[in-house]
Image 1 (cartoon, rainbow, N blue to C red):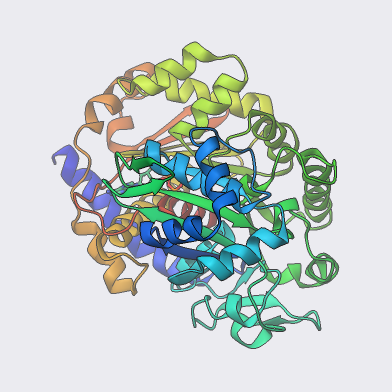
Image 2: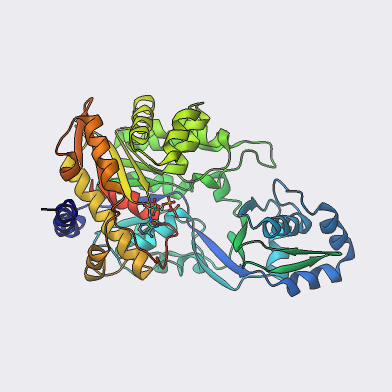
Length: 472
Ligand code: ADP
């Protein structure tokens, strides 16, 4: 049998096992934030009109062009951030610090469309179509506008004011948008006139301005904290993410550490009292090295499992001064460096499971007593099929639609890298099974399917990590 046919058979068998297995998983909790994304196309005439009506604002924006505000406290900060992003064609995200600016943007620019935002909210919406019995998502404040962005599936819950599980569509309280992440999108070649300069975007990109005064401090709502423990016997998995919303410092003089510590303590206590629960942390790209290091020091020791991509792995390595290893990981010519990097991370944090996803492969390190090699591999293969199907049709579909992910071709370029790793691990069967054992850990590598023209890839990493974690 060819190596391709061997892996295709493994993919098919894994899917046949995984769909029924999802039905037997007690429940999944997703924390710690859901929010509203306000999509807004940048319309130069709109901004030029605002500037022409307010000469002082126009003068300030003109004068500050090319500089980057650290955060948004005034309308000028917002427009300077937007202009800088557009001028360079570079993605930029800034927090809005003043409610008056949030009101100003609502009034002067508004949004074209709102959609679900926040890692937990997005994960909830793409997991709910799976045959999982119960998904509890953290969403605060849950106003009607936020609640309506959740999908209809009846396996999705929040904790309501009475401390019971209820679908978000029934559990909302009050109306209004109290938090919004504006996504200002611009195409390539868009011209914006500021004073006597005409800026032109060298490529399409986006500028994000986020107003999220509650979640920005990751403060977990007290009703959720109080009621969750009683509900935990019905749940088995906890996926934690969204910490990229933290800021290094806050206007009131507090710092990220003031808020990361209580979350770590909350997780630690839940884990101590409910040892059946397994925790996963999904790393996201975090610009601040201090916060990244904080997560490695405070959060990783409290969870069982970690999911990350190759860029996030390199950032962690560089934070620790392991520049050469990071460089070798980035080279992409061998997976030996990637494996070494994951082993070092597992050794230093005590994580029982780490899964890395990259285009073309997923690599997982798991303690031998956490899960078997086959279970772990089959969960990763299921995630690969799910990711292929979602990239093709743009959503998590029915079991039949998920099955169509099997038709997407495998990443051929991975096989030589896999053969090299097999030699390194002295495990002859590795290219066929994807499973090796070293130092009391299983090492599992699977080649993945790559969709040539994906419809949607945003949030794909979260989907891959969370589905592999839940099934593995
Ligand atoms: P996000 O932060 O949006 O969740 P990541 O960058 O963490 O995304 O992960 C994206 C992952 O999605 C990649 O590592 C890769 O495994 C997978 N992926 C990306 N593009 C494709 C594609 N065209 N076909 C299949 N899988 C893809």
